[in-house]
Image (cartoon, rainbow, N blue to C red; front, side, top):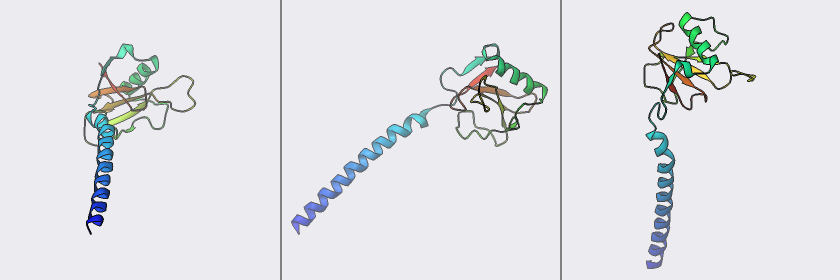
Length: 136
């Protein structure tokens, strides 16, 4: 009986050690993502510093279009949680043309608030992985 108890103890200790390692790895992987704050780093960009195509998209947003892509003006759900939290439907996304791209490319402008006079707009050069608030 003593031998069976020792064997059980060794298995339990091994399992706990593995679990501890798994928890440690999970914390190491999850913590950086969870600790990210929206718009971390270089969070503001002057409109004049944007690529010419982004400035053209901004002008289309201000005038209400017409937009070159069917998805322009679609609701942006902010699933990545990179932008400040707002009610669903607050953000809309617009494509920024990427020279040489065969599809819509990775560049976007996302605006929040009224369609023609948004409260704030954000530029993403990497398909929503990061954003910069566009200074008006």
